[in-house]
Amino acid sequence: MAGVTCVAVRDQVFLDGVIVEDTEDWFAQDDAGNVWYFGEAVVNYEYDENGNLIGTNDDGSWEAGLDVDGVGVSALPGIQMWAQPVVGNSYYQEFYSTAAEDIAQIIATNVTVKIHGGKTYTGCVRTLDWNPLDPEGLDYKYDAPGIGFVFEDALHDGVTLELTDTSL
Image 1: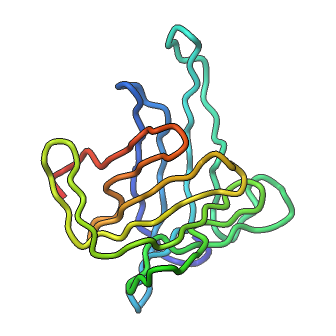
Image 2: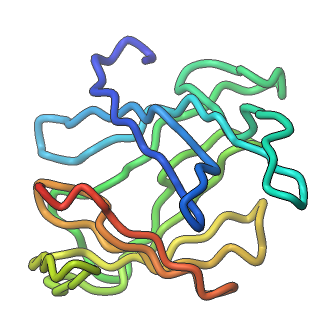
Image 3: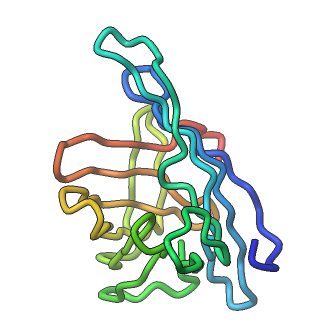
């Protein structure tokens, strides 16, 4: 991605046991230890009111250095995790004008998070995440050292997401 060797990570979101999003995310770590986010290939699943799959789309897909939607600008990589997080700092996690504009602010460091099944993660970073393209989407997210995302609390609708592969 943009001339940088990245690691691909598969991320799937299920609601009530049904897949709603399947992505391949691309990350790279710099010499200082910061983790950069270089894009994602997204498959969003759409269902009718009876729960039948009616189609998919790739809304939200982007790749650093490319203008995949033809909006007139290339996407830029963003920071996913700082090596040395500082409470109060705000930053873009991704930036592709009109398509992917996630922003985070570090709210706390050294947080302990316990998820369903009893798995506990220590030393986590808590961020407040938002996207100006989705004014209702305000979330607290938690990243664990050496792992990344472990928990999300969506403030607008009370939905929570969490890491389910607890072997990490």
